[in-house]
Length: 143
Image: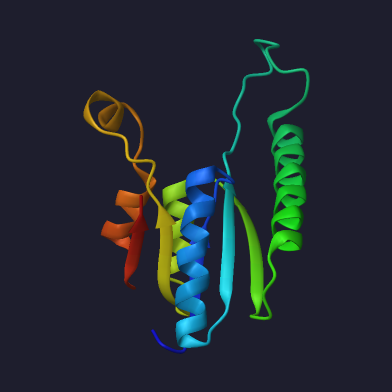
């Protein structure tokens, strides 16, 4: 772990930004880089319903472009000399983050938890919990 990259998944929320501080701290401690990953949901639609004015593929590309702009703004705000990679993936957030974590060059995942409890916990997929259960490297879940 001490020589491998820290993975920080983000949805660009305030909670995720809080976890970034921990990722930076860990990366500085071990003198490694950070890989930032954002997952864009794969939109779906049926052309027969005419609900979307654009195709799901066009919508996904638009979402990726917006994510790239947010990623660029985020990087501009970071004042660090450590190596930082950015990745934008498309698909299910938990699945894509776990795939990135298990790619072989990740030493630790630092991920934010939105802290849902009760009914909200059961109604929404808990990405942080899925990553913690399926990743082969250590996972730090930040509240």
